[in-house]
Length: 347
Image (tube, one colour):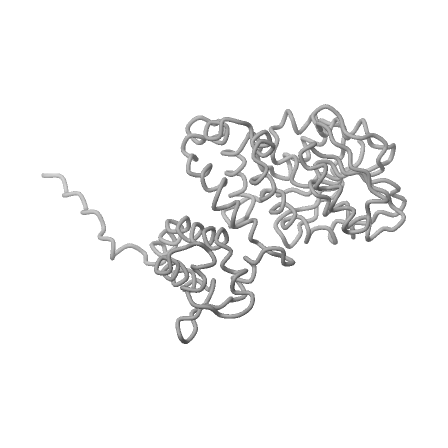
């Protein structure tokens, strides 16, 4: 008896349409990202702040080709970013408003970063998956923070994006309860959104913002602008070597995810040596959940893979990492922004 003939491959039309739609959306995601990135680079949202304008008017001021710009706006309007009105005039939408520079909650820096440096390094994801090594160093010829120091324009965009990401978390961290806390040390605090939020919420508290010398001047200016510079020192240094001693609380937001386990443990041990007796440690990080559900930390984990030697971690991995540095995990509270507040005390 002859063997049964192999079943022919299913025709595209026979495959589940929902699965095709999902995969199609994923495959064109880079095109949408670049369209938003270019609109942000050209400053189109700012040019429309005074009201609707034609593509010709926008192109003159943005330094673009009118026909090409019209095509860009048409594509973005199909996804709710800008809208075409009567007479060929283009207007802002709620999504496009978020691309305006200098506005509260502006996502312009995110658009610039994700479609610029991040876009380039994600294009080399295969290298990192095959080798386990960061693609960033290979592409840019420098470690991530060395690159930012050598390219201040990109560094400023990155800092602004991190500030946008951090600002909404300040009230949540401040509400964790800091009675009796005299001094909080924000390790790797960037411009200082978190420590400034804590100081505004707790007028009797003093702060120390500790970060790389690259961000020191910008942090000092920000703390002055928000009115807490008289209660917050800016100290620059290398957290892998030491952190400022004597704090009652040490705060690290999105710091450990950029470090491998060995480096993360060093930073935590430095905090353990520095914290006053009975003090506390607060981490703000993604905590990877089990299962297949979407979670922003899962894609961030790939960014850590291509960008350096860090990684996102599970709750149990944080517990183990903390224990190895002399801390006992006391609480883990998710926030509406995907990140969690992890609280620990000396073991």
